[in-house]
Length: 70
Image 1 (cartoon, rainbow, N blue to C red):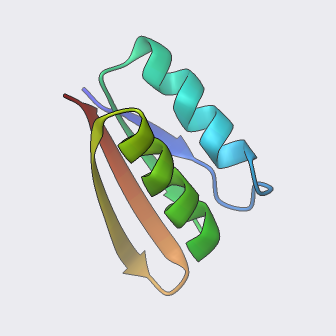
Image 2 (cartoon, one colour; image 1 turned 90 degrees about the horizontal axis):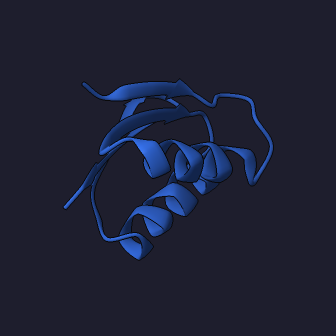
């Protein structure tokens, strides 16, 4: 089952750090952020780590990024 991480309102690098730590012990995570820059940084992290990444805009300024290790 995918771990859900709520990273809304966190500073610039914090969502990326949380995602990277979670992916060390999980094969699948979903992270929610409220800034476009955070979503773009998370997508770049997923690509860098070789994950399948699916990013969607749920509502205005709410983004969900799903990572799955290949």
